[in-house]
Image (cartoon, rainbow, N blue to C red; front, side):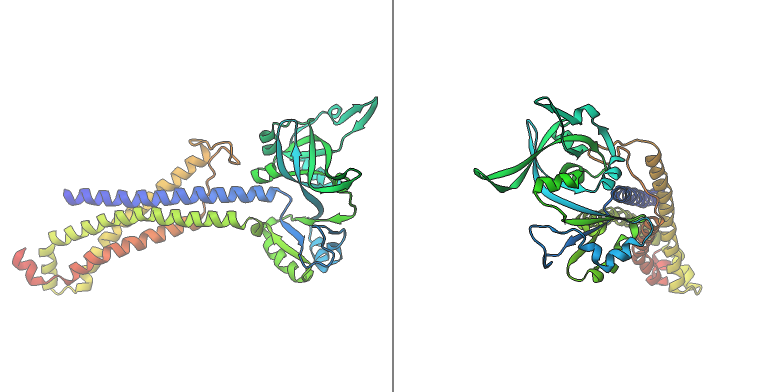
Length: 401
């Protein structure tokens, strides 16, 4: 009766450990896949930036058309569904009537703005984009801000904002800050809080006017039909642009984030694997007590000619049977929990996440890894009591049994 109780505890312990591993890894993989899907939805899959050694590189600007002259541009433009956007951007201070924050303003082509408008959640009424001064009707330049920035600054579509350059310009009264008024034409939402908080978009002509420049570019952004090909394409492009440009794909641009997710997944796997290790101690106890209880039977089997390996195999099979029962039960329970979490909203995430629903995946790779590691842990746990049973003396069992 006591052995049966310990056996049940062993099965439950292994099962709970396997369940915890499967659920946690599935949820963490779900977060990573959710992040990738939001990165895919954006229009930046490959970033081309001028290298510091670029001969015409001055103050972060290069002549427009510099990248278009390279063989890499020809190669990437021939790929179906590829879009290449030239960007002129600068760091500015965004000022409202009550708050101030630092942002990056990106000047893009009108075609790119049409792409951005598909991601707008709020737009300003046409009459709000027009301002009357001294009997004249003026149309202020438009700017599009992220949802996070709008919430942080309390900005609504149609509000006026002022962009102030941190670099001064020479005027008749000396050095004065460069500033320009804009009207918020819309609020976009990409699901990437960092971009929504620090990046605003406008037509490139507005940035040229703000910077007092023309026909310059700070970088190029490439959008692919299949964003998963970005790492391969970026490796092919780098040798073709020599030392003038630096090519980065979306994985390189988010290296720290994906590295942190990978490290966190490994740490959680190791920590939760100790649940199975602790449960395997119960298997060791069960088999050790079973060896003591069956000492007489072991001695009789050895006296009848059974080999030590054959006797050890019996107890090894018993230990693996206990472990496999727990692994199967834990795998089934883990799958059911993941299915319920993906279908029903038992847990609602805070607003800071992309979706309020807990993301869960069903990757066979993680199921296989968890099952394999659990079997190996159980196997190692069975070695000591199995060896003890195999090395027991037939005379001791008959004499003291």
